Each structure stands twice: as C-alpha cells, then as structure tokens.
Image 1: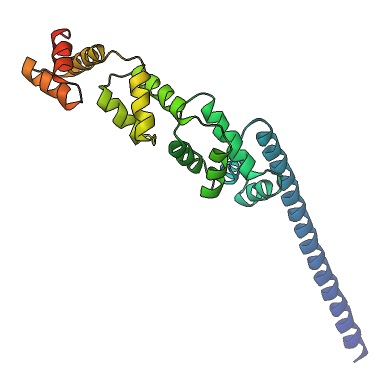
Image 2 (image 1 turned 90 degrees about the vertical axis):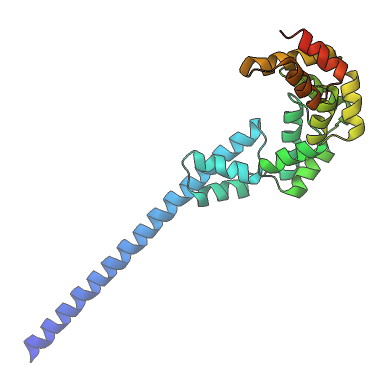
Length: 225
C-alpha cells in the first residue's frame, strides 16, 4: 500500500504543477495581449492628435480616418474618445475651411457638415459661429456658376434657390453678377448645338424653356450659328 500511496502523491503533484504552468501561460498571454492592445491604442491616439492639429474632423470622420490607417474599430474609437477634441469647435473650423474656398448658403453648409459626420446640433453650431453674409455668398456662387456654364437670369435664380439661398438673395445675386443675358443665351445655344441638331425655331423654343426671353433667345440663336 505504501508504494501506491507515494505514487499517487507524486502524480498529484505533477498534475498540480501542470495546472499552475497552464494558468501561468494563460496569464502571460493575457498580459501580452493587453499590453499590445494598450500600445496600439496609444499609437492610434497619437495619430488622432496629429490629425486634429492641422485639420478639422467630426468624431465619425476622425474615427474613419484612424481606421483607414489600419487601426481596429475599438482602437479608433479609443483615440476619438480621448483626443480631447471639442466637436462643436471642430465644426466651426470645418465650416470656415469650406467658406475659405467656396460659397455656401447656410442650408447647404449645414448639410455639408452633416455629410462630414457632424451631428445636426454640431453642424448648426458650426454654421451659427461663422460670419456668413448670405447675399455675398449668393453672389460668389452665381459668379462661380457663370464661370463654367451658361444660365438665363431665371435659371440662375432657381439654381441659387436650390442651393438654399433665399429668393431675395438669389435675385439680388442674379441682378448684380454682371452677366450679359444675350451672351449667356448665345453660349447656351452653342452648347446645345455642340451635341445635338436643332432648327432655328426649335433652338429658340429650347432657350425660352431655359428661362431666356424671346428677345434673348432670338439673339442667342442668331449668334450661335
């Protein structure tokens, strides 16, 4: 009986050692995984802080950018949560950035900020804290359109209203954009003739449909051929 008892104790001790070894390996693996996760979160946070130093981001926009860099969703979320950004102020900076190179109505600027990932409240805050002279913005937008396409006065007003400008601002912009509507009719007529064929009467009718007066449409047709 004695040898059996000692053999039993020996086997028992070996099993305990194996169990402790397995537990130690599990702990080491968990610590390694946690360490790697923490390291990646720090790297993601550093990248997030670098981005918001030179550009404006929404929370969602920053998270997507960090994920694009190869970080996991959880790491990007950690970075966006801890980067210290004020998302309202980021919306203001993004709005001013857009206004620095293009013209917007308040409505279209709000929509653009929401498209960038800002919440409705953040977008509204961003727009409300920018100095937007809607009349001036409408005029800039009108001149921008006329720089690459032809419009009738009516067509230009309608386009500006579609962009979110009020009827008053759109009308004032069309009145002060410096367009020669006869010349606009000529450009529009030439544009139509560049890809389709029209009789003289058909072309005049098409120009009138675009908002030109009969006189303007006739002028455009006469100078387009």
